[in-house]
Length: 200
Image 1: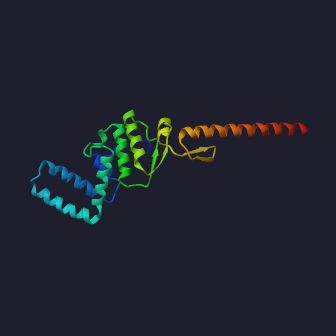
Image 2 (image 1 turned 180 degrees about the vertical axis):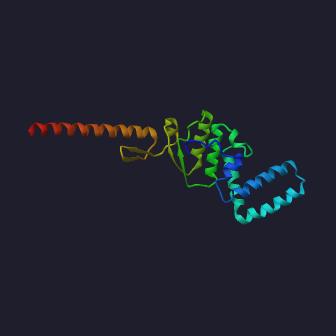
């Protein structure tokens, strides 16, 4: 999304795990239990609850999703225990991106991905997307971002769609050549129309 939701409850882990809605409750419980056990490692009751929960995670397939969540959080360079509401805009955007990545999409759709980000966050995002290796579609007004990432430009203008199989710099050149050709055609048409009007 273009706007980052600021009121998502819980930690980075909770927000990312919420992508798998069927598994999120079990994963939240697992994450909470492991955090409590890190402080009270000898608590037998917690250990028993964790063992029972482990079996439910295995049976539901949530364990595999837990691994995807941890991988996505690591890829985004986030602290899984950080409270989402306390993060900067850049880290919130990384968290939302990690939530999308946990689902292992074939296509990632980004709406103004650099909005509200500082330079370091934008550079991180560019590097990450360049190395991701899957299809990315994005809408942006950030020309530096376009120059760095775009390999195809799709332009929607006055109800028509034009696709340019090139980067941003080549797109600008091709578009300018197309506009000049259209201007010449319109000029020729205007001259023809003027001659027709005289004849009429």
